[in-house]
Figure 1 (spheres, rainbow, N blue to C red):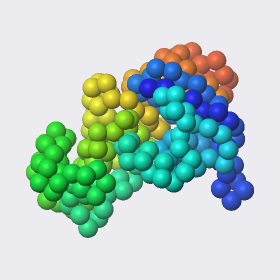
Figure 2: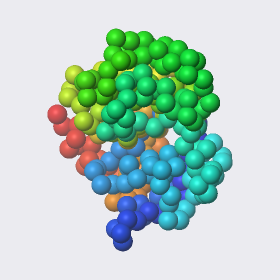
Figure 3: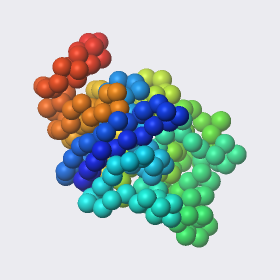
Figure 4: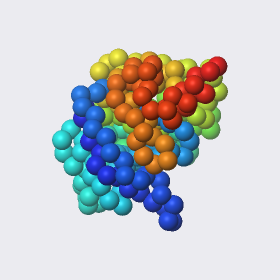
Length: 243
């Protein structure tokens, strides 16, 4: 996967979230967006997902510019899988129905075909006995696994994860990260925003460090985690990796 960001700006109510983001990342399978809270990571991910439109600037994915019109953005959103920290499951639907709904309504599956495929995914993510349950009846880790299964179900070009474990306790965090690592090992392309530095260092082949709405450093994850060039990045890792 390739990603090029050219002078990306985004503000909300006069408050700048991204202030001239520039980066060129070539031939990666897993990109980690890291840095201090409020640095612009989630905003950038939402722009890549087509959920937000930058005030100015251009995003190129695999050499193609991100669409600017709503019809193009809708097609783009339908071609990728996005997983949020708050799960974003429909509370009135069962786990199975949460996976089936987009397959039927957006991707043209028949009901029987969609249910059969959803059943396979529930088994794959060790949720086969929970398909009849609604989100409120599931643990946080189970809900996030349903959300990941729903994202994988559409056979996306790539996967986006926005702090997928921030609402989970340590045991559930480990459980969800294991499944993301498994997807990575299958060769799926993914971009993840995370505060879990150990996982980012292990999983990512490229890393983008954002702070104050700008890219401070980018490049191979091994280089950034083990020998960062920028003082701000050095101080950040010295603090967060202390324990």
